[in-house]
Length: 290
Image (cartoon, rainbow, N blue to C red; front, side, top):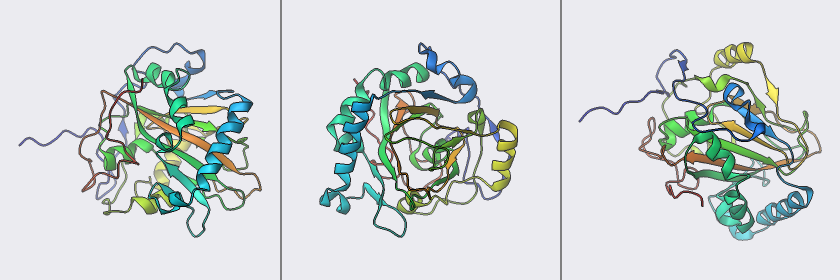
């Protein structure tokens, strides 16, 4: 049997050179003016995607989820490391009808279709809670590296939409990105341990680049930060290098996080793991959003 071609090898025993992206960033036709810089930068900021009333409604719904006792017995709820504060709840579009409706709207799924040039499905959804004083950040990483290695996503033909439910300030753990870094794939070192994913969702230590890799990309591309009022959103490429700092301020930061993958880029067997992660993290239901 012929070996499967892997254009983005990662989790290697020793450091290997960066891989310049050969796949397009924009596969379709950009119609929204807000997405004009997406191909160059790898991200776009969308002001007031939700209006204030919608922000209030979604915030109340996401808070209600944290109060449901049965969810604390569900693997989809991830607590902060060392505390009983909720860090993330996965498959939020299946747990909450309002989010399910939002996903289908053209102002949301339509953005992904413009970039990906095809019908799309939800690869992953979650709500992230970054509480004041205790919210732990996310170390620098490329989502595609993990989705490729552990979920079996063939190419970086996916986008993430982070919708702010609270004001994003420069000081409360808002997301940082390296504009243009989506054009470089950074292989990571070390084998993928079995069943490590829940710990990685609390504090990612597998599939993170070396400090020298981060320094090289930062010197080349610089850093930008997503700040804005509640209701604004960030659409970003699956391969862009990004991360966030801890939130030691009194001001919480929460967001709805939706990952859209092309129906022409559906998952196969993982490229660098013994088995795929659970489907609430990497969906294998490729039904297009209608």
